[in-house]
Length: 227
Ligand SMILES: NC(=O)c1ccc[n+]([C@@H]2O[C@H](COP(=O)([O-])OP(=O)(O)OC[C@H]3O[C@@H](n4cnc5c(N)ncnc54)[C@H](OP(=O)(O)O)[C@@H]3O)[C@@H](O)[C@H]2O)c1
Image (cartoon, rainbow, N blue to C red; front, side):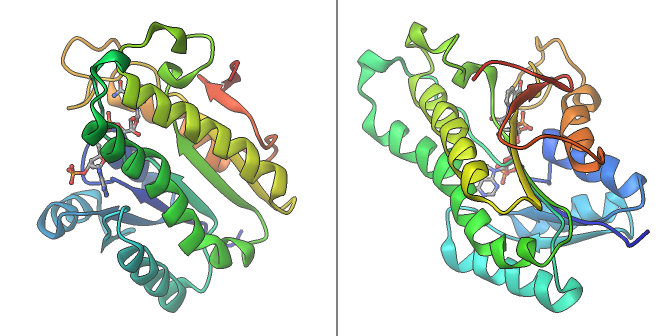
């Protein structure tokens, strides 16, 4: 079988690094994207020869375009894009923290959009392409009415909505899904989180590798969950 090629954003630590590790262990070629040159270089070295680092702040259109140019010149196509990079925003809706709202939306929603736009021509060249948006149950309509973590919830709710729109418009050979990793022990999840990072990466790797999966769904633990 032809070698599969994946790009993971925010791959220098946390869930993104673990997704990159697991895909590389399966024999994939992985492009690990990170915004800090030294950190992404170090992570890629640790993950081994199947992992190539690329510097990319997902908020920067020019850096997304450069990352796409690099993938194009090295591999000519992309099979899987994992939009993992994200930040938290913990202010409640009534705090009206506009700076936090803008910053979190710019990363968690727009960053995923910028990166996907840059990679789209390369995904079109794959016979079996996937876009996997790492969302959160905190952006589920079932959970959103609380109003705490407003910027984060809105960004993930919006990312889910955009996942549905993109899936609805993508050609059949590009499957687009969102997933929640659960509450994972990372810098973002904190030490009290219930899941090890290995488990947090599991469903993303499954969505990347499973031969037959639907498109336009929201997943946790390899099962569809409500938007
Ligand atoms: N941990 C959880 O419990 C949990 C639960 C549900 C969903 N999630 C989602 O899972 C994803 C990964 O979370 P995590 O727990 O692994 O978080 P993390 O440990 O805080 O790691 C976040 C990663 O995103 C990167 N990043 C942030 N802004 C970026 C930007 N503008 N450009 C490029 N990279 C950027 C960070 O890079 P730097 O090192 O440069 O900051 C880091 O590599 C996020 O989308 C998060 O919302 C996590």
